[in-house]
Amino acid sequence: MQFGVFSIGDVAPDPLTGRTPTEYERIKAMTAIAVRAEEAGLDVFATGEHHNPPYVPSSPATLLAYVAARTERLLLSTATTLVTTNDPVRIAEEFALLQHLADGRVDLTLGRGNTPNVYPWFGQDLREGLALARENYALLHRLWREEDIDWRGRSRARLDGFTSTPRPLDGVPPFVWHASVRSPETAEQAAHYGDGFFANNLFAPAAHYARLVDLYRTRYADHGHGTAEQAVVGIGGQVFVRARSQDAVRAFRPYFDHSPVYGGRESLEECTARTPLAVGSPDEVIEKILTFREAYGDYQRQLFLVDHAGLPRETVLEQIDLLGERIVPVLRRELASARPPACVPAPRHPAAAAVPRHGGAPAAQADPAAVAAAVPHPAAAVLSGL
Image (cartoon, rainbow, N blue to C red; front, side):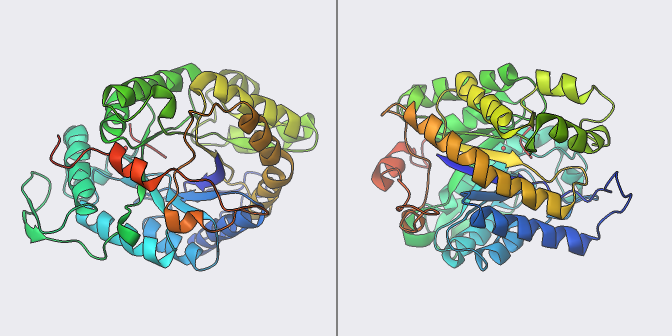
């Protein structure tokens, strides 16, 4: 199982000091978070994609390439790649190039995002969001698997005999997750292609996300990719940890209260009781994260949001250290001990799988032939999709 952190790259004032970091400082903080994640023994760093203030990660592939040059084994991913407004040709080329630079340590999460204005900025219509997600991914899927492509669609210029370059590393495309906050259509798309499904798992009760995961698992089996238990599931979450529970609550409360997502809707105590948000001691956070398996079944990837709403850089780095020292080792042990043999390993490119995990042997990987066989031929027949 893979554990990691993700950042949406928001630039927000620290409510304790009133100081807002510069864009330069926020970008550098994101890269420091990624490097510290590797040093702490975590497996994955993922960045969001936004094209509006107060966010900075408008070019995820550029950010991840910078991180790739400063890490050795960390898997590099996206919390959302906007499949609706990005040209699928550019996604295919940028992430295949990143694959080569990072020796295969790349996958990506597709979604529709949460900023309606981004559609007209990139010449698209918000009302066509679902259709754009279907059409653009159908093309992206082909671009990584075929050459000399002829293509006609509604979202971009026609292609005649087109081959994207570079080709995926060793002929194995980056693994794709499809992310959703509430859309069953996204779960269906992930299941149709035999890709992974990533549930936001942040702002609503776990039962809400469990319905999407259950739908994905059922349809994954219906499409003939394997059993429901073999479907590839990723889960988000947000944590804040201190040695003592009362210290965690006291330290996190100002950031919760000033959060544009959480603030003013309910108290911190109400939110932690209602949603997957975990604030407390290491033991309390571990106990809550272990309940995710009860809601979603055995899953392959767990990512934590740790730098939201103005939390200062040093505090975030401390949180990553606590994850690596006190929380993730226990979660690895407990979740592995209950993992049934039928549950597939977390996806990883064969080239990246040869790189030893922190303090251990090379990571287990799914059989590339089995993964390839699970993906239908293109002729047969997405922070987070909304």
